[in-house]
Image (cartoon, rainbow, N blue to C red; front, top):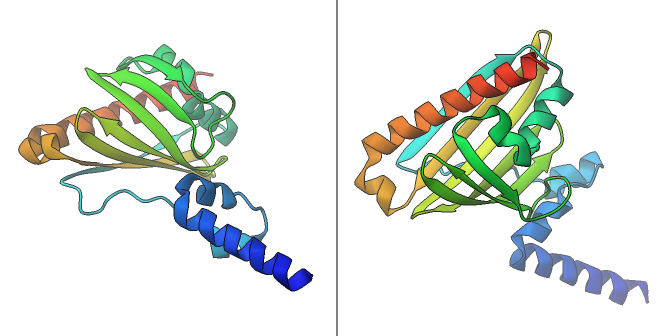
Length: 188
């Protein structure tokens, strides 16, 4: 009986991996190193996108503080002036498959969380008025605080049609985001 049960389990796992990206992402939370090496695939930005921005900032605050500020999406408008509203559609902590809707600089965005490694990595993406974005954040503790690295890619017809203006907009947006995150974390 063990062989059929194992075969059924393997077939079910393969089906989930092939048909449900969020289910596959959920498998990456297995704490064992062997499972992480086999199942974990980090979400990446689209390296062929016409608009890509990468930025870093060192924040002189504990990792827990920085992480909690960044992942408390409903409170973004209190410290992030460019974010007008945020509505979390999925209750609880951010996890793969969580969604939230937010408005910033005239864009109404629905973001879906693709990856969460608490205190280490956060990725989300989604569409906004013809633009498809993938946004990845990494958090690295240092002797002096936390090095926050962010990178984001934009694709879609509006991006192709107006690449120069949208590149400048994304560069400015991420610069402001990191500056505001630093200020908020260092004053708590």
